[in-house]
Length: 405
Ligand SMILES: Nc1nc2c(c(=O)[nH]1)N[C@H]1C(S)=C(S)[C@@H](COP(=O)(O)OP(=O)(O)OC[C@H]3O[C@@H](n4cnc5c(N)ncnc54)[C@H](O)[C@@H]3O)O[C@H]1N2
Ligand code: MOO
Image (cartoon, rainbow, N blue to C red; front, top):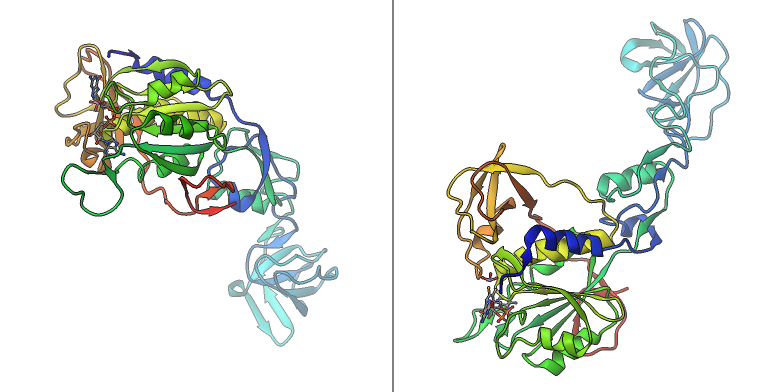
């Protein structure tokens, strides 16, 4: 199996991922989604003329007579006549008529008499000076991270219009797999199932269920018939062995299979298919590092496209250390980044995640590479496996991840 060019395969998967429709999402559920429309300020920032320091709002030239106190959250204070001062807390509404806020440390108070020096306008944040209402602050296509959520809240939003997150069903195949402990003789511990939810969320999608199938074509067909996902990712069974039923099951379901085999090392038996109803199927090879490479090649770009994330040029670096290109295949090499150089970390056999687990990125080494900069695919770090939501389902064989919606 040689397969299509790695760059072409990746581009194909990206272009197949047309953004899903927009939905209105509460802020606390929008993390990782992509803005479907620009973010606009619903209220000015700050929302009122606000004190920037704790001290006294003063009107007219001093000395002043302190007539009251206003703190953040208090009702709007009455206008301040010339010659008066109002004790004020940071963030409180500055009374109309005030010329400046005099910080405590720049003022002298004796009873209700106040003196001090000020420049007009000092320490008053005017309504809308950071951002006026109606101003577009972020473009569509922005990924909603924690800082975007904070900004959106400060501008008055309770919900955000984001592209619906792609829902991903995970199908883990292989009768030899076990899910806990040290594998008995001949068994293999599942390493791809635990890796996928974080990769899926990192691409702006949502893992909604996981199903385990034995090496049986009917069971594979059943798993592929589940409709409660936009994308099905199948681990293992991509190759040509007697127990590898993915291709046969896809043929039985009359799927289109535009990619089966990509010219890369590792990961070449990976597969991309489209079922007649439009659901996508991505097949990852069973060897765990090969599966990670295939996920970075076909799964992540597809999910990012469906999630509405704009394509960005990949970062680049010059490999420093032993990199042996392949004559015809693209090599994906786990590297750590030190400045503008990428150091291969080794331990990168197809069956082992050791190297990739300690790496910052996969370096993309083209066939026949003779030196110079190469593209980098950053690897996600520390994506939490908790908090997965899943639709209600009455399908017993599938293990539902997290609590139902
Ligand atoms: N005749 C050929 N044989 C193979 C080819 C080929 O082109 N022609 N390609 C080889 C390559 S490269 C790979 S990679 C594997 C891919 O095989 P499958 O996707 O069919 O995967 P399996 O046969 O089910 O498993 C392969 C290997 O990986 C282990 N495995 C499977 N799932 C998991 C998992 N979730 N966690 C950890 N390890 C897993 C499985 O036990 C096998 O050891 O095919 C080659 N053969
Ligand atoms: O390339 Mo396989 O994908 O060698 O493990």
